Image 1: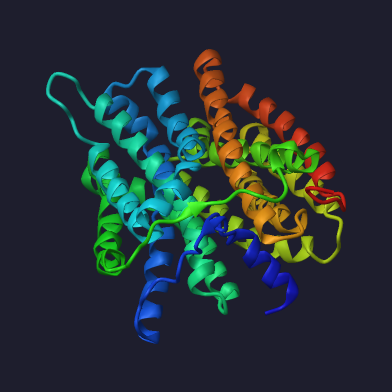
Image 2: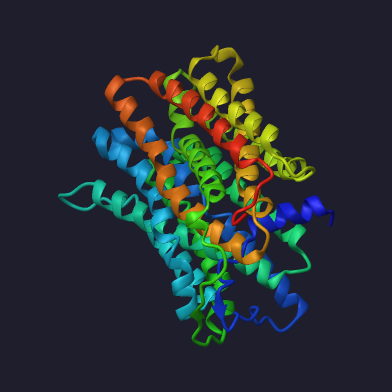
Length: 421
């Protein structure tokens, strides 16, 4: 594994349990075959972490009409799960110290499966809205725990395969969004029911839950304590520059998951084609996330690449709204490459702006809590602007501004400076 590949893998696999005393032991699997089985389970968990976002947006017009959702409910349903990614992220290490990472991850997958099953339920006299709200909130909380714990497990249990496992893990998460975007509308078209299309995504989550169950329940676990020392990232200007860069990235990233399909459909693209376009854009995100960290780590300074990919993302998003529809595949390709690269270089900042693993773990926790918590305002603002103006034009202007701000903070975060001096 090259240094660039190693840095790329480590940037996405920061162990947030690094402050545990005593340190958590690797998952007990008993053999090489058991380790391979564990690796498959972890990758399959990653493959379920974004379908909740992209499946909802793929059938949003049908769902809104069929469930009779008011405009405010649509805004809330696209915002709440992202907000909860930030709210519940700090709880993951606390729960892991008490119960063990494997058991908490298993519990999170159980909650995710239950939330996906609950979303389409129609309560007599109350309609679909209560179940949609509760199920979506449960999914957001569960994904928050998985987001934090899964990278640490991958890093802890596969220290000599970080390149392979890091690549498989991150690709699985991108593929999760692509699958939700690409297959939900065809499921709706074949069944005629948006409820069936959404319910389907509980099936793969439930299968992974059953596969991971025997591994998780037999893991021994002792009490662990948390010891905090080293650099205080919350008092570091560099850490805040990196974190705000992450916030702006998250604002655009989750807005793409939540609103790109509705944007295309409002412009006249049919549901099936819109799903394919979004899936192709997300596939290009994988390509960007594969190569961008290697480019970013070739030098000690990431100002140029941070600025370029931020402008590509903001510009690509705006062109999807304002650009000629005949070139929509070009605009979404630009958006996909930019967004994948932007997400990857934002995460890469964790490693290149810190000097040790402990500081990197603390910066990662700060970025996830603040990044996802404030990043959800992107989906909120797009929804409110659309509800208030009746079109996505204002959202296009918004993301030109967000892209420009991301370029400014990406430039500052990319300077050759370190958290803690």
